[in-house]
Amino acid sequence: MTLRIESVSDEHGTTIRLIGRMQAQHVEELKAQIATSRARVLLDLEELSLVDIDAVRFLGTCQTAGVALVHCPPYINDWIAKERGRDT
Image 1 (tube, rainbow, N blue to C red):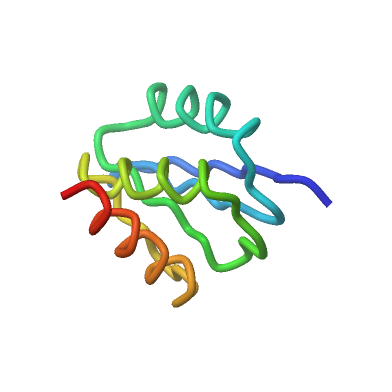
Image 2: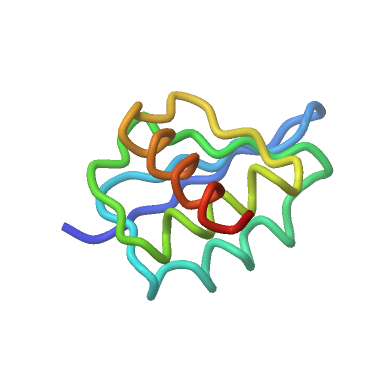
């Protein structure tokens, strides 16, 4: 299974659901989705089953830029935190 991206927008902003496996090859597509979204963007990671290092770094960058990560699996949160620690 690869990554499926579902986007829902309303007056409050845009929620982008990531479903499946996210890898480096999906980062550009997700960047484009975020760029064309409304002001407030949420990434719903509830159904994200697997990520690679490039996806984790990208998700960490999104979080730093103000994009909310909701329903984020603990292992992804931990991995993002570890990668941030390496940047300092």
